[in-house]
Image (cartoon, rainbow, N blue to C red):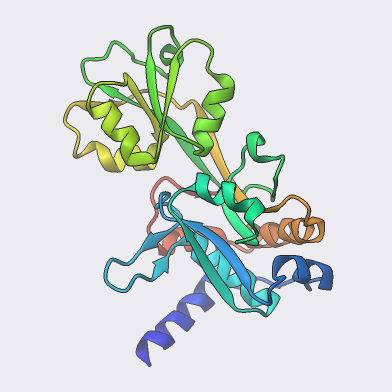
Length: 261
């Protein structure tokens, strides 16, 4: 009883004084074609989603936003869990999810339509303490090996922009860290908050000065769902203007994730 009351009060605090716009029938049909909102979730980006080790319950900014969207649609919410954002993106043609929060990347635009950005995160490099690399600009040089998890938003960006360094793509974030720790990579690309969280356990590592990009995340939906995409644009604008996103980030104590203003 107390837990239910607490969750209800938290929802009220997050929602604030947002005034929801009406949901067009066409948008509801495209966002919930099975009668429920199937949200593609990934557990690799802990800035957005975490899983309780005891109960298995998912929490985080992405969960808050998906619950609010489902509430406005008037349908139940189903969280469809994937290990990585790349797996979520790859599943777009399988019809397993209707909406997801992903890094906005041009490489995904052939199959996914993105809403305006809801958040921003700096992406930078970690290097070994004895490395001669001092700034982001120095990393893209011949002979420099960069490790990054495949299909992460920043990996897709580096694939398009690197000119001289060698990019090694790994299956997941942990494999990318392993490659770096084994000194088979000179630099490790990642979201700055995650790198800061990990660096305390890595005495041989330091963060480099600057950033190579700012990662923006937004709602995504399968490319052909035009009415859904149009409504998600309106929904995101309302979530930002009402302060919903900023309050959710503050409530979950997420460091390094900022709401777009």
